[in-house]
Image (cartoon, rainbow, N blue to C red; front, side):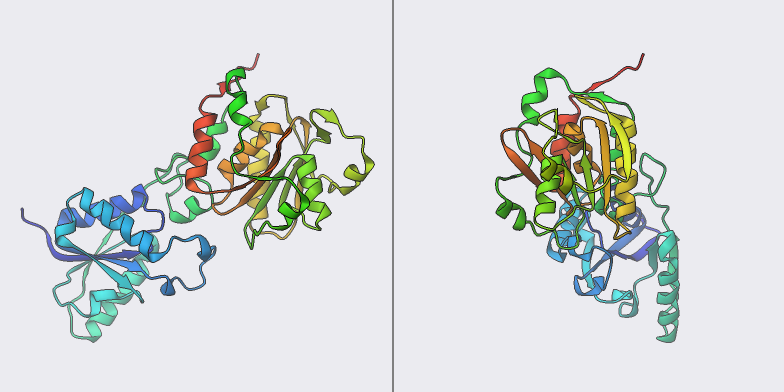
Length: 335
C-alpha cells in the first residue's frame, strides 16, 4: 500500500479515549507509512482544570495501545511521552506531516518555525475536523469529565427529553444502594470531597450535612420525609433557604425538573454559591439524573427509606449502571 506521507505525528492528552480521538488517529494511519503519537505526560499537564481526574499516563497509554492493536496499527505506530509540544518533530528529519485540530493549529505552526530554525523542512499541516456529539457540540475529554457526554458523544441530558415514570417492577432495584451507606453523622464526617461538586438529595441527608457544618453545592429538598411533611422544627431550621422551585410528581422524573437541576449544576461549577432547589411533589427519584449529569469525581448523596444515606462517587461505570436502570422507565405521555 502506498501512503501520501512517510512519517506523521500527532499529539494530545487522550484522556478517556473517545471516538473523536480514534477518528484523529485513523486519519493519520490511513495517509502515513509511519505514525508517532505524542502522549502528554502527567507532569506536562500543568495546571489544567480538574487535573486530578484526568487519567494517569499509564492508563491513557494502555488504552491507546489497546486501540492501536485492535486496528492493527501497532506495527507501524510509536507512542512518545510528551514533555513539551515538540516531541520528536525537532529530532527526526523523516517526519513530514503533523495532524492538528482547529484549536491546535497554532502549536503546529510553532513546530514548523522551530524546525526551520534547525534546518529541517516545514511539515505538512493536516487539520482534522472534530467530531460532534448528539447535541451538535464537539466531543471532548473535558465534556466527558464534566459529565455532559459519554465517550461516544451521547448526551446524558437527552435521556430526559421526556418525563419518565418508574414502573412498579423496577422499584425494588431502585431501593438497592448505588453507593456506600451512611448510617451515622460520623459517616458523613468521613466524606472527603476535596474540590469536587457535592449534590445532596433529600431533606434528612441535607440536614445531616448541615449538622456537621457542611452544605452541598446543590441541595434538593421537598420538606418531606418518608413522603410525609416534616414537622420537626429542628430539622426544618437546619435546611437551607431554597433559591429555586420546581415541580416533580411522585414516581416520576419530570423533564422540567431535570432541566433546572442541570442548569443549576452547571452554574455551580464556576461559582462558590451554594444552591438549594425545593421540589413541589417528591424528590425521591432525582438522584438518578444527578448521577448522570454530574461531573466525574462528584459526590452524590441521597437517602433510601429504612436504609440510610447513600454516597455515590460519580464515575463513567456508575453512570452506565444508572443509565441501564433508567432505560427501564416508561415515557409518560402527557394528555
